Length: 396
Image (cartoon, rainbow, N blue to C red; front, side):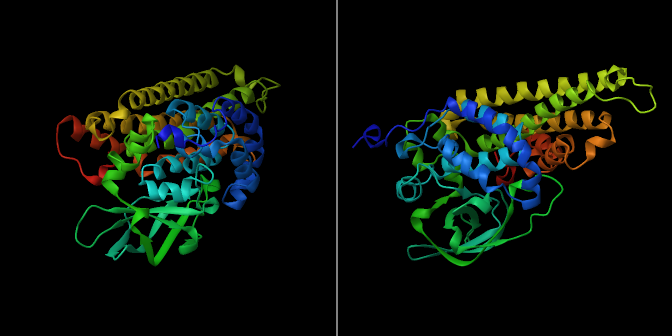
């Protein structure tokens, strides 16, 4: 039977999801404090995303997903981030992880994706666990940090080292087989609930595992799907997905700051508006320039992946490195823009109810992610440009 004949009934169209993102955005703003207090997204946010079909958006059509292109998916994520960066990060990762699961073999896809068109799965992919090959699969032990979305997931995907020095293996485990260590007490991105996954000698059948190198560059599951996005290099794609909430947060911070400066009176000024001060104009202009630069780089990364991503593992290392650099630049420029705005916003902008201070904390936290470490990223790009060898730790 052809792939087309196996496609389930047509899912919801992707176009209305932009409208849904705009419609839910005020509610994400109003729930942001609750998300920080809970240290995970409110149940209502997950329920609304599920009902809207967002978790199907980037999943393949074979199982009932929408099979959206990357640009459409990230446009929705960017709008969500204007409401709450933690929400956009968590929702986008849960949706994007269905795309990763579709890179595994058919048996895993049927098990996890065929019922709803997606599965809610966290993916702390740093290879900080160990696997021992046994009959029928692997026995897995380890701890994996930064499991964004795990508080809402049914599955988790982890990477393990093998004792014989072979390529790491990615394993998918039901959440019932692991323990969640409640460690997520941070200054920013609190709502992502990025706790630690712990496994102790858990059996993983072979069909729920895949060589990590194949998963990143030449996934066997891509052959099942007509959508070219399933071939896109995983590391580059994940980098620009993860950078998108920073851009949305910065765009909203610029809007919030501009509105604030139109209304805020200066203390001891006899009623003068703060927005009349030249220093405010300078800060506002500088932030606007950085956000425009971030937006242009972001769009260029998307265009590069949509043009070259279908080549899969044949996509040039230099092009994958350029996307990695671009994603880090999006976060850097967005963070610097928010810094500019908060430096001039006044002390009252730092009340915990203020979206400006939350954007500052959230994007600074994103900037600390290993993929967005500017010094490390630029060093990697310099080595690539000089044709020097790279390592798996460079995540290209």
